[in-house]
Image 1 (cartoon, rainbow, N blue to C red):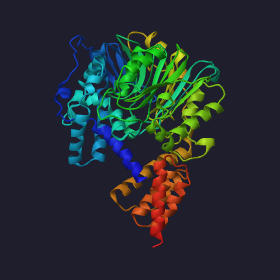
Image 2: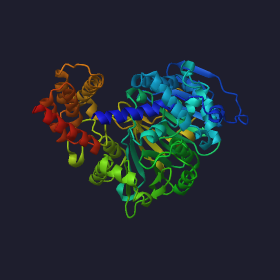
Image 3: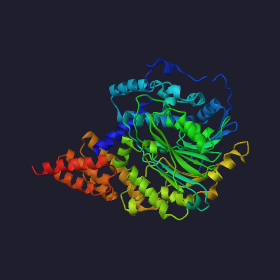
Image 4: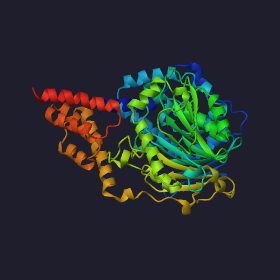
Length: 560
């Protein structure tokens, strides 16, 4: 458990420290995109209230479900600049989340200085691998970044490396602070025989990171209009669909990682979304970019009426498509022939919870009759393990780990999309139709949400249960116990029992109890807690090894 938490903290630290860029690599620090060919005239910003902003035909509003809806159009510089103009307060909040986490995890100025120097070297050539138009967008949005963080790095560099945050953390530790799971179904697997895609984006960088989700509707001067789920300052794409009915979602994988940053995966998927209308076009774009992490990109296509996985890594490239089947499942390991003998991928299958979630998703798809958006949402919200086993709330083996940044369901052939609202993917799934957003919308913006209320999918009834209240209370207790263990502080031991009572089937509640008792030299109690934890559904081999190791040590010490 302690090892697991350390790895997670290091991963998150790597993400956050990626912004702490030292000005030691001259070319990368001084490089700026050529924006001379773009108009710099921007419409005036009008503020209707604290949740409604307009600038010409562009706007940002907050809907009743708490999702921000952004509409922006123009050339790359205009898209970036207007996004920054409208969402500057959200950008500030997002940066503050990252830098506050840095101070929390690494209070040592010496360690921060070391990370700045390392990352200045690591990122030295990233600017060469990002298309000029996206650098222009990033430059535009950076002009509205807060000056509060200028001592860390100037705004453009902070904004640029924001787009490689996921990749940097992944590359430094070859870990994923995510357990994303996605599916696609078509033909006889769906009610209307049309393509249906669903995914959970289980990236977790603290609760505050997911508080201000932005649903961006972007109409660029070149390429296809598209939507994506994003956050302040982020111009890349993690989940999105364009007006050609092409969708992209990303799932982290494992393979050999080079020690230099190249094209961030969110920029690759942004390019696919903006310029591809078919699977073949998406594959061609993905092949043209050098990445520095391993990722599965699920591409769904209304024109092709199916979905495939484009599996990219620094040294290998594969495409996986199902044969004689109308469904596709993706977790966090590769499935194409290119990775059939890949050692790291095989290790991920054996030692992580990726294969378990893959099997669970496959099982749920088989259990459902013909799928529709509501049934797809119910799968994404599923909190149990294989054979409907109760594995504790928050378990990484569950499809719904109760930490998702967002859940999303696409109907590409109808250009419809459903996006979850807080908390996690439990809130109402809000429906949008790209036909009405981009084709039938009046030119003058209004303060009315772009959603289609009649198509919304109701919040999960689980939100009204005592079990949910207990889980939220458990999370508070868990953080207190983890803090006590990390700082060697004494704890009221009734809190440990409270954590177990609130989430009795969750392995981690007992693992934390074992770690605390072991540190306080109560070895008999520690051994009992570790033994119980091992008999629950433990997510990874490293977790199991930790428990077994300390069970043995605690048992031996208890006998002395």
